[in-house]
Length: 152
Image 1 (cartoon, rainbow, N blue to C red):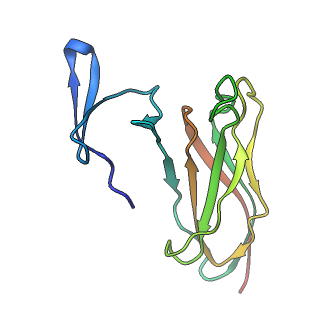
Image 2 (cartoon, helix red, strand yellow; image 1 turned 45 degrees about the horizontal axis):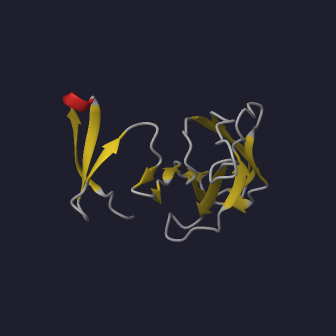
């Protein structure tokens, strides 16, 4: 994992703002909930889910449904106008990861989008990792996996 650039953060009352110091450049940045990059570099948000196993039995994952705020894409032909959730997984305790697959989280106003990754294969143990790099708000609420356990 890469170290987070911010080494210190403080609230500055005169500006009613949070400021953070960058250990690499010694620059000071404004931090708030509507900024989705680090000095022009996309801010990648990542959630690694708990380990899934069933005492050595085989597990089939038919679907992984992500409950989240959808329809938050940006206006125009810009990064984030059709934002994606990116999913990968590890079957060896996080030593290696699959290629990422993507699902739309909804263009602006598409509030009926369902973020569902389907046909995720058969395994004995797995860790899922969900990532977002589009400059949008990410509000995760829950995840629900449709699984079937079979005796080894």
